[in-house]
Length: 354
Image (tube, rainbow, N blue to C red; front, side, top):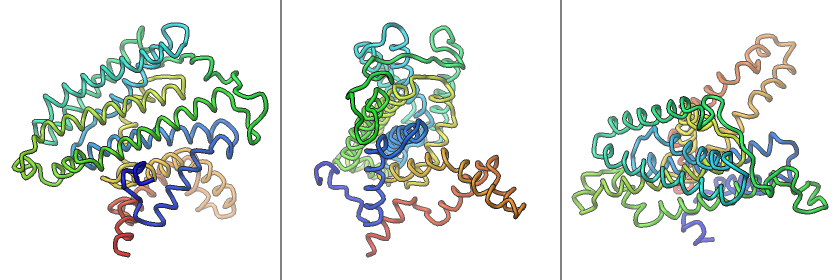
């Protein structure tokens, strides 16, 4: 366990308990839930954990503010989506699409890093915002190739088809079909990518990134080529984001600019990083789980609460499902007020005091 977690334990029993519950909840989601919505929520949580953790490698561990993360996420999604849509779905086409997406991601991350990471942080953020916006517009306008604003749906290899059955009999009351197999590909892929990022931030390379975040002039004076480390961190984070995008596309069997490249996705990533805690990989786990659950179920819960409070019109109106975005914002403000260092930062801080 020490090697698997790179000697980076939760260091707080409550945080450890929360992480265990999330892990087993995601690992057995197909067998403890029923219906498409809970499984879709669990798969989205898995992908967002990796996407947010890769962004935290930039923001929380290196101090780089980038708005191009959704672009790399989208490249990974479009790579596998367009490849599978171009012919008879097969694992070979999926592999070619993924490799092409990773190559494009690496080249773009390298170019953006070489030309932009030498300038001040605010200018780098503006450059990445411009590049990401240009890419989103390009994806929308190349409708013959990308499907434009409507995006593209595509088929997957037969093993991942809902009609495919791995076993004739049910396992724990659930048919193990292609959808369940796809979920476990997403779950295992995301778990491996998360452990890879955990290893990165706890390696000597990760320590240098944290030194650059704290004081880049001092790190430079100690002999570290900070631009080289920043570019490498940018490339690693971009590649992981692209693989997260590929897993998301494989799960949804759809790619489109609103789902993969919109600024809303970038906003969600930033909110999750802040809620979970910057500079803590476990923050991505806790933050993504809470945020995606709230995004999917807060509206339904408010509907139930509003119906039960019909005798109190003021409360019933305040909790009307149409106001779920307002309450999501309130929950965000409350979490920032009580957990200024993020939920994981707060729990780990209290753990160290004890």
